Length: 195
Image (cartoon, rainbow, N blue to C red; front, side):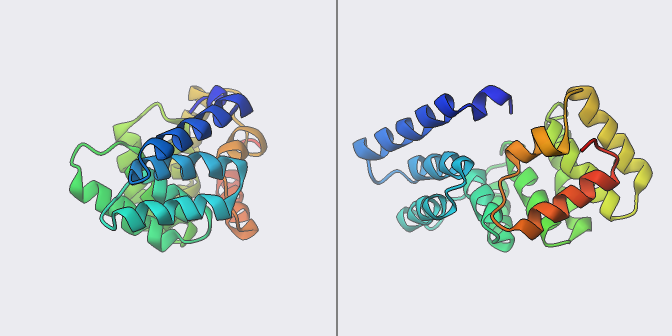
């Protein structure tokens, strides 16, 4: 994910396009997933959750990593895991974001072995995705696997020499509960990533 995606103009455009899609066809769960996925970046957790719930009301079998991100962001990691795993089961060509969301959600539940499994899969599918490496670094640090944690942290910094926990990571780590953010920062810091 690049910083342009997070710019207010691009974010507003994405939200407006999702709303336009809904206006043209209010029965598209994909449009609600996209709406919630972008609204949450404005930290409007209630509106994002409502969009995710609407997507699932339209199709209870709809499984998409965007919904998984919404649910772990609002503090419901178990639901995020169920959605991400369903997407992976239904789509053998799923994007790397599905195991990434499962891994992040397991991390928030402090289920680090499960988190490591899914995050390693995500990194294997997208080796140049800095945030996959960052979450894997935090997970290894929480497991006490400091050599692995530092190797992943080095990979983050190779991919983005300007990465920082308080800057780059905080922009994309949209978490409603302060304790979830503190837990993530703790793992990233232990792994040796710069504040």
